[in-house]
Structure formats: C-alpha cells, structure tokens
Amino acid sequence: MGPKVDALVVDTTAFIRNAPIHELSSNITTVQEVVNEITSKRQIRRLVVLPYDLQLKDVFQENIQFITEFSKKTGDYPSLSATDIKVMALTYQLEKEKVGTEHLNTEPQMKKELTFNRLPNDLTNVAGFFVPGKKENQKDSEIKDSEVNDVIEKFDALNCSDNINGVKLDDILAPVKEESHIEKNENSSDNEKDYDSEEDDDDEEEDDDDEDDDSDSGWITPQNIASKRQEIILEESGEPLKVACITSDFAMQNVLKQIGLNMLSCDGRLIQQLRSFILRCYACFKTTSVMTKVFCPNCGNKTLKKVAVSLKEDGTQVIHISSKKRLSARGKRFSLPTPKGGKHAKNPILSEDQRIPDQRPSRLARTKNNPLDPDYTAGYSPFVMRDINSRSAMLGIRGNMDIKSLMRHEPNNARRKGKKKK
Image 1 (cartoon, rainbow, N blue to C red):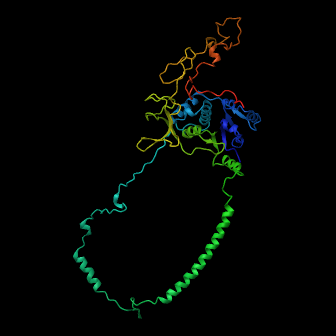
Image 2: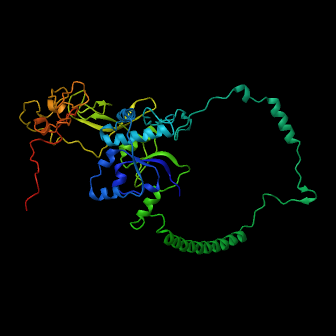
C-alpha cells in the first residue's frame, strides 16, 4: 500500500503512543515545541531511533494569527496550548502551499437546528376530526335531466338471455356445494401445519448454526483490538491526501474540521459533530462570546462556564447545557489572605478592574549586549550578562509575561509537601 498522505503534520500524542505514522506518509513534519514536550526517557529513546526522517519547520506569524483568531471564534481557544496552535498553523501553512486556500473557511460555520411545527398547517387529515372539504362548483356538478332519461331508456332496451353461443348457463344464484370443499381445505390446512412446523425446526437449526458461526465475527475483543485499530489507521481512501494533521485532541480536531483541513487520529477517535462554544454565567445567566473572559461582564462574578451553542433557522441561539455537571458553591466562601505590597506582590485577583503590579524584570535583565553597536565601549566582555541575583530573577519573571495570579483553589488550604510519612 502506498502512502496515504503526502505531507503529515504530527502532534505530540502520536509520538507518545508510538503510532506507526511512517506507514501513513513518507514526509513527516512537526514543530520544535512538539519535540520539547517529550520528556520521558522511553519516548526520547524511541524518538532518537525513528525509522523515518522527521522534519522540523518554522511557522509564519500570519498563520499563527489566523489559527488564534479562528479558535477564539469557535470557543476552543482556552483549551488550546501554544504548541497546539503552532501545529495547526503548520498544517494550514502546508495546505496553503500545496493546495491553496480557496476551499478553506475563514469563518466558523455555526451548527443549525431544523425545527418542525408540531401541528400541521393543513388540518384536513387530523386524526379524530372531520373537516368538510370545499364545496365544488355547482355548475360542474349539475347533470341535466335529459341526459339521465336517455341513459335510462338505453338500459331498458337491453335484453338478457340465458344462452351464449348455444350454451345454457346455470343460475348464478344457485347454492354451491361447500362440504367437500371444506373437507379439502381442512386436509390441506393440516398438511400445511405439519410442513410449516418442519420448516420452522429447520430454520431454527440453521439460525443456531449461523449464530455459532457469526458469534465471533464483527466483534471487537481483547484479542483483536490491536488489529482493529491498525485497520482504522490504515484504512485506504479513494485518493491520497495532500496535507493532514494527526492528533487526538478534540479541541484541535474541532478547529481543523471547521477550517476544512484534513485530520487523522492515532486510535480512530475522531469527532463526528462540529461544535461552537460560548461562556455562560450561572449567576446572572448572561452569555458572552469572548472566550478569554474570566469574570462575567454583567455581574462581575467569576461564574463563567463553557457551553455549546447552535443556531435555529431564524438565527436565534440554542444553548446546550449538560445536566450531568451539577453546580456547587463549595469553596466559594473563605477568608482572603493578607494583601502584600511591593512591586512583585502576588495577590489574588478578585475582579476584572483590579490594579495589579507591572511585574517587570530588572534593569540588568532588560539590557541587551550588542558588540556591533557604534556606541559600544571597547574593553567590556562581549558575552551577555545574566541576571540571577535580583528578586524578579528569583521569582522567574521575564518580559511580556501573562499575569497568572488567579485562585484555582482556596489559598488557605494546606498543601501537600513531600511524601507522606509511614
């Protein structure tokens, strides 16, 4: 079997699960961040002795920007990492180079629901009710009396005879002898019953044999699950794909499928329905399509939940709320820790408009050493000096960092440190 994909972009899950991706394509590509995510010794050993050449490519910034904006519109942006976005951007970049972008979507296609009226508009065929039809035109339905009289005269002129071609016919109203016919029917019915019972016995025996033969065929058992997965991965298609991405991340699959890019899975787990997500506040029941929000724009509480939405024919949104996920107020009320000052304070963020420190790195960390600068003072070392002693360096603060001071858990709870003593 020849290669199924001309250019295959690989996610981290394919390397972790040791998928036979060399059987899918001879041109396998990924980004450097995917290789950096592999930290296990066993997986690194497999990565060193790959039976194919793994190509690492850089992604253009415009493609990363397109994937980022598209994932925000579908609502999958909070579920994606920077590596996931780069993998999808590389797939989009190769698709643009090899095929083009005319067949790709620039906006997500919202799922539409078809609604049907419970009561039909035509009430003439309602069960249990009689609706009289429209009166027909009386001019068309009226028959002239002269025409009726002509028909009666013609029927009166007809003569009926008992002889046809010299043969006398019996009286059609003569009684029929039914006794012999009934006896014959009884005998034939008994024979049919015996024959049917024999056929039923034969059919039951044949069904039992067929069930025994087909009991193991078509079922997935622990013995053949590996071969079934291999068949799903290596299932041949009509034409080989130009570009595809292999991943098991459902958020990535949702974005790729809505764009129109081809995708594969390591174990056959592919999404069947496209979904779009928004944030819904379970305190004031307002919604927002900005998936980067943490606090509700209406009430200001941190009570936003991601829900799936679809569109009706008239354009109204339908929110699909899962009844399995129950809301709980546990852990919502607790005493706050004492606020701390300083330019590197990490206080919990309780509202969207709360003032936070700049978290800037030190001056030494912000200096750039450029030996080719015309104002460069000769005699100094051309090597870059690293800041390792300042408080910002100890806290791991670098330039252009996102502030992550949000409380995921109650800060007053004791944290586990080390192993439990026996």
